[in-house]
Image (cartoon, rainbow, N blue to C red):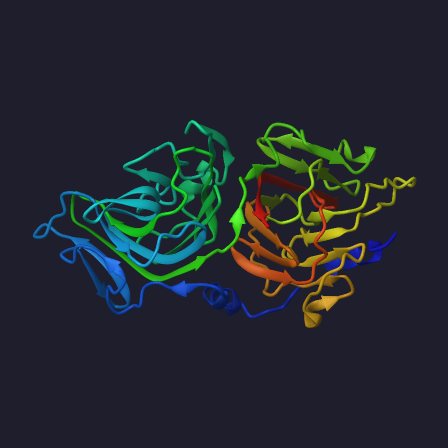
Length: 431
């Protein structure tokens, strides 16, 4: 069947790229603009008794001689972003701080709204907090939550396990760490050093759709916090309301590619479990065209799998149960060590980099940035018209153009590797 020989050999290829490429690319991705010049506070409004610039960083500091009684903020003046990705590095030696976004100014150097928490306490740093509004209604560190129209919080799952958070693998106290905040429509995700820490679908009818960016100093004892490399990518797309494709309890809304898949797929501990064999896939009953698909996955064994998009052929179970009939679709590769590769299943029309393409497979841009077997990773796939981008743990690993813009289902592929998937969220891109 078309495409089969290629998939049987897909796991044989690995991209070989210097290890420095990851660090270099994180700052080089197009579309980001620096909003701090590294020299002075131009463009920022703050109480300069507490805020200054030292060694290329915005510094907030209070002392016994210069105490801070109430929270104060260093506010970026040029705009009020709605949909954006914000990246910055921070270091805190003591005290409490945060990064405000989609917030409103409520007084002189005072704001209210969403905050990405900064603290040296593991399990707190990384949470989403409501400054002066909604407070702990937003997800704590490790939570994936939904706020309904009435503003009530519903926990949908985990983005990180408590035991893992306590080990502190995602955050290095007293050192420079990188925050990434992705806000698109009503879907918000926070990352520290590429690890997801809090995720929200904000359906609250009173939510802020846009607002100021600001840096916080918390009132109280002496403290010092530093910020540098502050980069903003504003997004022009309009987004529909995010949809959770997997309810965390069962496979409602999903369809098997054949009867032989019924024992392959199951749900355990809030995740879809893929036994890996026999080969096949499950797909959504709904179809989608333009979207951002964000999910977490982890390998439980070495082997193959994948995420399918724009499935535009009917399922065709093979009369020979030892063979698999793959649909025409785009595959974001799921083989361990090769996640980020693109597969043109069934010769799906698209254009990729010739130098990285072998038959229907296009190797990822950089060496694998996946985590060890058993650890969760973030997979993000954007299909915007004819353009495709694939990110693994926030690293842009692949792209394609001239993709056939057709309506199709989302699928998860079983092809030999034991895997789990959770927090499967699709945010429509409206045209």
